[in-house]
Structure formats: C-alpha cells, structure tokens
Image (cartoon, rainbow, N blue to C red; front, top):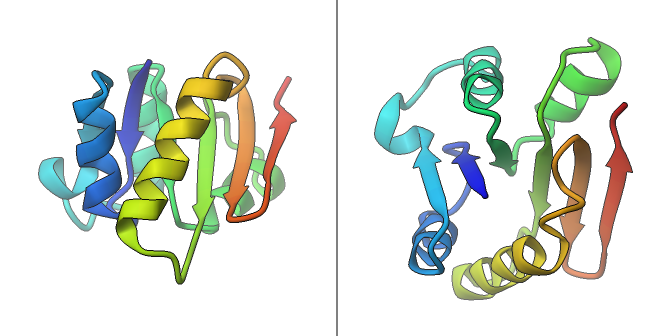
Length: 117
C-alpha cells in the first residue's frame, strides 16, 4: 500500500512503516510547510492513503466535501512514539483493505472506519 504521511505524523511511524516494506512519502522530507490542500492533492494524485494527526482533514472531507482516496487520522497523543508506530503499523496490516475510500480514526482504544462513497 502506498502511503503519504503528513508532517504532523511522528517520524518514528514513518520509519517503522518503511521497515515493514511500505512505500511512504513524507511531507516533512518533500515539502515541509505546504498547505493541507496541497497535502490532500498530493495524496489523491498518487492514490495514496493519507496518514495524519491533523484534524483539519476531517473538516476538509466532511464539511467542505473535498475528495480523498482515504485518510487515517492518528489520535494517539500522550503515547510514546514507539507505541504509536506499533499501533499504526498494526492497523495498516490488519485493516489495509478497508482503509482506501474511507476516513478512519485511530485512538489508543479504538479504530473507527467510515466509508466514503
């Protein structure tokens, strides 16, 4: 699965996903400071699943009606980076087929997946 990681995502998550063999483009390496609109456009151009910790993407998709190929919103504040990386990697492995064309929210206690049709 091809992934685009927003710069709001911890570097350790990106590193762990790469170690697991995922193709991950990282905004912090490509174009730090670009707008959320540009990030979403980049993800859509390559049909990447967007990984982010930025809640603004929910606003963009649900209130503004912007299209997306899929978003995983990572809401794991307060957890160590290594634990965040483990949880995100696990979700990608276990639910990877459900995440495209969906808006998913990962917390320490749950994963909510909402299909976007």
